[in-house]
Image (cartoon, rainbow, N blue to C red):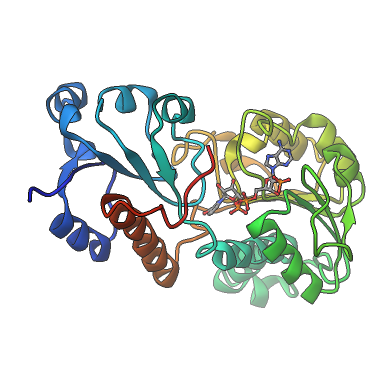
Length: 316
Ligand code: NAP
């Protein structure tokens, strides 16, 4: 029997590529010089799209595949997939939740500690000879015992909260409704109120039209000059201009960011903004987790072509 034809939107690690090539006829969209011509040629044969959270699947791409049955996302965020097209045509979507939760929460805490304790600058102090020449590194601020605000207590938000408890931090969170099992944390649904009641605001929301720019000038003002923002979710959840203004004017103490509008080409103001810690969207970037994500994405494709329910379907 002929192998199902799959449109692959971007590269995967080699340990995923070999099994994909073995199971499917893979069409490499990202390698095509003329992408429109490529889609016009292969689109009608495509039964599944294999993509990544950052690449998604555009309306035009989905439209070019009239026989498309499913889209398998490598990543938990599916905001870059044109969901309206999927809903309209009954196209299934899978993602890779849970397997990356702990790594993303780890990096969120690493970012908080590095930002507030200035570990990067402190290392530079040693390497540059400033320690010997100028003496002690300037004092920083304490993290343990401060107040964490978790904007979006989903899988990753809850994992961040658990880690913050280990640092003796008080936890407040927002979500659309109070979460069962989170009774020992304070539920503050409004983002401005949450910011007013925390020192470190972790942004762990899904990115939807409703959450776009939820961290705006008012939220930053409420956070105040000693507050920090740590965003490991999606850039769209933060109004970057308002954030840059707040950083440049000292309205907040700092920001640690793993995600940016237009990444990997970020607004150059970030490169000169004071007290920012910049990361290359690598929250899930460990070998262990990327292997688990690849396996889960492939398991979803396998289930679909075996006529089974998806392992981790997205509710559309
Ligand atoms: P999740 O379990 O679906 O949690 C998402 C949270 O967002 C939930 O608490 C949800 O609240 C909340 N939310 C959604 N819409 C909302 C709205 N309109 N108002 C208020 N809250 C809303 O997702 P996750 O697996 O934890 O992932 C969280 C984020 O991390 C996503 O944006 C994902 O793309 C991102 N991510 C980043 C990386 C990285 O490398 N940096 C890696 C993986 C994931 P309810 O529970 O009330 O619905």
